[in-house]
Image (cartoon, rainbow, N blue to C red; front, side):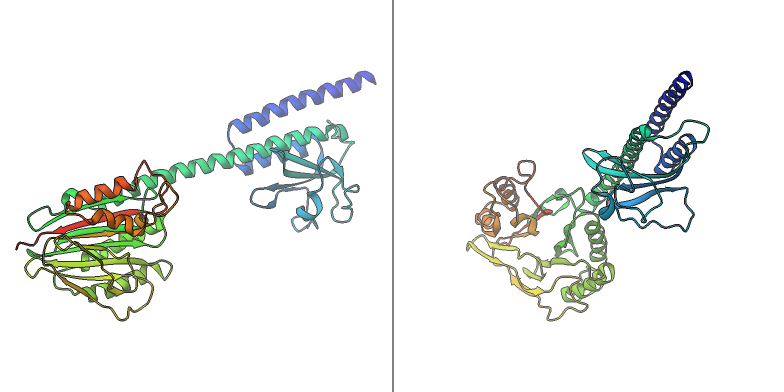
Length: 412
């Protein structure tokens, strides 16, 4: 008899060793959750003669992840939060006062990182079958097996998340390069006897929702714009890319700014379905008449600085932002005639909401201070970047930062 019991113990020890080796192999192979649970079920029902088996696991919430030995329509009257969370050690269903709620026998809690990660419930244990019997003394082994499976499932999820994040990172890199192609480089802007234009762009994420441009409409007219999508990230970048394409297609020397803004608003309404909006400042400069016409559609008011008189004003005339209303109402066009050399600075709110070292916003006054001088507009922009510590020196910025500076020369 003693020899028979010794052989049983040896058989079970060999079984445990073989099982742990098999579980280790499964973990190393990074098998998906269904395969892990199928192998786990086979071990418990085939090798340990467990007739009924339930596992509740926790991810975002508690859910039933394995049900074995039950009829397909057989339901359990269990709620993890109410019935199981107080159980911290291996317990019988009777001791847990769950008799009548389930026809299972034993509850095995499983912990990971000092938190309950799973509950195993077993029943219909057939002690008389030939083979190793899952008696009470083997319940801790089942607990260990379940812990390994739960950790393996978690590792697989983390691996899949890592793969997805890496794929998303690559997509963002591609999107960022594509968007960089849409944002014009400063060296492409006019720098001649009529105008000097410079710009700066720093997205909050790899891709952003800002757009600016400056281009010729004909031999004597320039067009310029600055726009900002509400929100950040990929969705904002996609909407802005679509907006940029529409603006470049519609903006000709023949279209009035009011008609242009109306058409752009229709495009944004169709694209964004009211979920996002775009602020826009758009204008024209005629070098023959020296007139600037503009519309400020809900955008930050640009700085307009007349160098000779040292007068600084804000360009506010316009209408609501794009995508806020089906039909824009009371659109006003601003008009200015240049009497001397003039600087204009367009920007997005990421600039004036920039948090400085003393945890206060930079504000419009700080930017205006960099404009009130006779220095060329590119030097003003450099000064803004330096004084506000924009870029690597200042990690505290919460939105895309875009600046478009223009200096128009007027001969006496």
